[in-house]
Image (tube, rainbow, N blue to C red; front, side):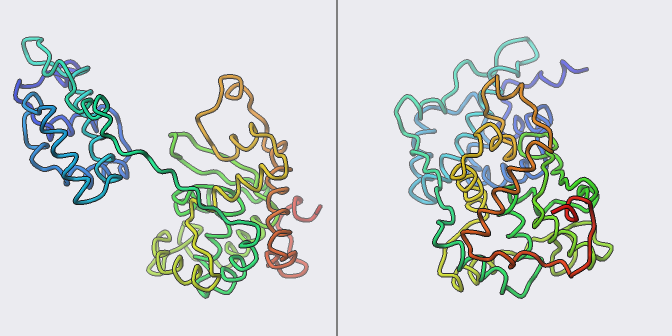
Length: 323
């Protein structure tokens, strides 16, 4: 039964390959939706039999898509196509055991050096920007958005990790936060700083039945943050992105000499050396690093008390009481 999944007709289309690919590769739903959005740029190729796609077609359509929608979009779309054709070549075969394709025409983009050079964003909050940015965030009227941005800065987490965070993944007793099913497919637990926990505790006191920590205006998880980027950026005079806050966290951590192995663990980076992958530091060993980054952020922002929002006398854990 399993083998039948990989037997296809000789004229199988890229659309059909995609249906098989997303099941065999067990892609996450958000990845499936993202890929399907991109593949709509090339409906002619998707409807065509895989074996009929030529190198000339690939080169012509890539250049056309680059001109019409930009090089970044074209590169993203054709990298997906390259994966689909390679999957066809390596995994699928006709009912008589013959390969569907022998070569991958999309690889012509590499041979001709046609791929656009990837430009990695390098935005992050500079030390001089920390104070106006934090002040603008704290002034922002939607506390779900402002708390979400603070949380991203104080933990270095990814945007989706914060928006999908639910209360059952916040362990106040031990000062831990767990991000479920992260980018590398694993759950990731970090020790949060005192200030991050203070903010979460304040939100918990006012929480409704919504399971999400950072809630949207109409319920569910937070999703309406685009206007906040513009408003906060304009108020602070600072252009920023949420992923830039992740880079800010890493940059601050490096500036105070936190070991790169610890930074990689806390950021949940999978691209570490074999030795680093064997080292599994405990949350308590990492806690001093998360607190040190928060302390440095507060120092740079000249806002020693701005993040301490707990009312006098409230205490939710030994961690807070001891500090």
